[in-house]
Amino acid sequence: MSLNHVRPWRNIYRRKSRQIMVGNVPVGGDAPIAVQTMTNTLTTDPAATIAQVQAAAEAGADLVRVSVPDQASAKALKEIVRESPVPIVADIHFHYKRGIEAAEAGAACLRINPGNIGDEKRVAEVIKAARDHNCSIRIGVNAGSLEKHLLEKYGEPCPDAMVESGLDHIKILQDHDFHEFKISVKASDVFMSAAAYQALAEATDAPIHLGITEAGGLVSGTIKSAIGLGQLLWMGIGDTIRVSLSADPVEEVKVGFEILKSLGLRHRGVNIISCPSCARQGFDVIKTVETLEKRLEHIKTPMSLSIIGCVVNGPGEALMTDVGFTGGGAGSGMVYLAGKASHKMSNEQMVDHIVEEVEKKAAELDATKDAAE
Image (cartoon, rainbow, N blue to C red):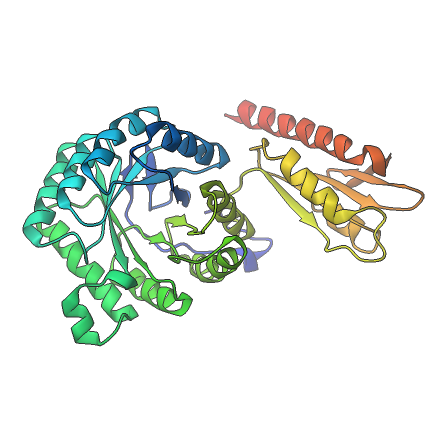
């Protein structure tokens, strides 16, 4: 990433990993951190699964994982891959033959779990299929399904056991001269995940996929993921991320992007800066922001918008944003454009007007970018 010489305290120095390709998406190296989610429809229902994949892609997902638990799902995967606007990662947990079938169906990546996939001979067959079909592999270590010998060795799931599992599996891939892989070491415990990922980052140059597995519902899971993934990303660790929520996959994508946006690692859509509101507010801040979030979902151009209820912090925040609105008195407030006070607008017309200004600014930014290219 480019360094901020004016504000060096904003710099994040990403860990140097080698780069692989997942379909047409570069992962690792200096590539943008990819956002991933996973479908929760039945894979044997291609129409429903494709619809969910497309919704996730529209929300910004770079990769989408699809579970392949049985032969029927593997057969349906071919249609899903064909219709998907983004590369598909096939989730293989138990039967190695599903991995072979998924590679043949066109999956861009196979996620295999070392604790469940079987012995090295079976893994070798999956590797061959991946190589034959130009498919990458993710080694997906999970604290809840570690190999029996590691549990006996360490007594319980722990960071050391997770990293050892991952490195053992890396060795198998490398022994078969297969290097198109990334790796994850997920746990539902934030402390365990963070410690495992930090140790893993020092032990390999492979691209790392981040996740706090089984994080919970929308609110609790978002907080848990933001804490766990946020600190790792801040340390420069992570090449792809997935926020695991008991919620719509689109919400996972939104949260993933918000985490990356908050750290300046990815920029997509409108970053709304808004106050929590108080008795000083000149308009209903909470309702306004909720409405604007929905009305501006279609904007993909990176830009900033400040919505502040009063003049205490409003003008100062507006100085740093592309478009801003600060509440005033007598039922109106001030619209700011490019950090400068521009004109007054009534509270009743404010939402529609802000949407228009944001759309106009997005078009200007897009035109400038196109001209530069």
